[in-house]
Length: 445
Image 1 (tube, one colour):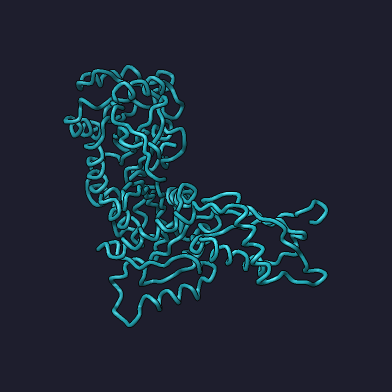
Image 2 (cartoon, one colour):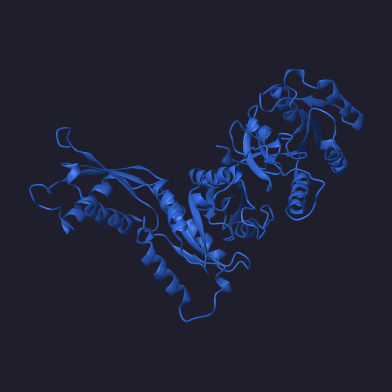
């Protein structure tokens, strides 16, 4: 796994909007990771991913486009892009086949201090399209120009060889520390996800703005706490389907939901002033169904008026409104000031230990025998069953199989009893536990 490497060389993609940076990013990553759309300015935050190029591990970063208009979010996007490029070991400066635009020229002037670690790449040259014009870039001082088609894959191999030849891999190391804890930040727009991500990573990787939908793609960050490595996935705010009114937001929401597949734990950010919403419930239910650890994070806690036992009142209300998530920890924080973040990370470490816990089969079956004695199954002719045997089939997510004489007779209520016992007696008190019932004999279904 690429998570096992550290000190990877950084390769950043730069250029004006719509030259194909995100398409090239996806091509080099061999997956659709960055959102691609003809709308200018889709990419805002730098999008990072650890990938293998010709068998060598690198960190690939897609940046926002350079625009002449520098007001509002554009100014923040360009500032974040320049911060990323300053840290990169190699920059792929993309152009579109054809005449240079004022924005192209501004990119070249801006990146002049980084010229010794910049490769000029001309995209959309499939079939030799406008190749002669592309060579005019040599007049700008580039030693070599790479003509590619990111969409069709033309000459990508040549570009990959050039990338590898320019990088130093001598500092790349295998990470022998315990597994990295991967956390996805999810929630409605403007609940403070990007602020929390920047707080935890001690960076400004995610653009923070009061404009809903500022974050469009998944922004990754890393940090360490108590000798543990963490990976943060800052996602777009998830709104109800009826509120989604453009293709880009549709893809952003889908990407946010898919981030759960790449995470161990979900921090569900809830605006403490607004409280739990139906949309929050849906997000938590998705995380539950995927077997992820879930923390209900009450953000902006510092903005609430001081009352007696305010947290207990808020927690009781959440438990009342969402009994299905009774096991999930609730942590009040202020992403803006950092209050509560230490408790939040301690909780994440505790949840990860539960997610990765394995129970020996003999111990599990001794526990099952004890639970059956404490609360025997129903004895009626249509409700009678026996649980013969059990085993744990996976961790992270935690799954068990129980073999029963009459699986269809095992009620949800009794299954809930077994699940609660597993949480209490086996150390899974704060995570989802999935139980599958199978017949102990083929003729008894």
